[in-house]
Image 1 (cartoon, rainbow, N blue to C red):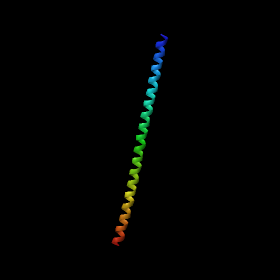
Image 2 (image 1 turned 90 degrees about the vertical axis):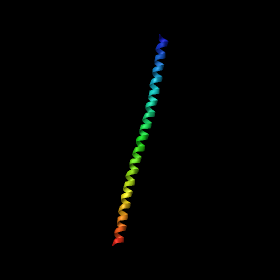
Image 3 (image 1 turned 60 degrees about the horizontal axis):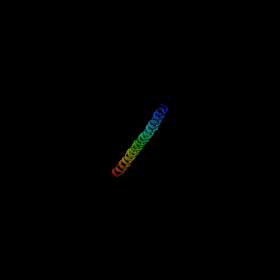
Image 4 (image 1 turned 30 degrees about the vertical axis):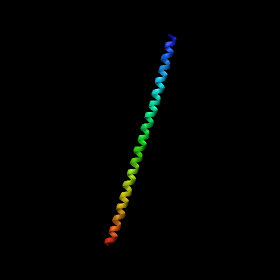
Length: 67
């Protein structure tokens, strides 16, 4: 009876630690994906700002050409 209880405890520890490592991996993948999405979002905002800046520059050039 004592040996069976010991085996159950060992199996319980194995399951607990394997689930813990899977959760760690899942969290790592999730946060890595989240960081990637944030980086893409920031680079998109920078690209939009640059394009609007370029647009203003080209409009100023056009105005100086016309006048």
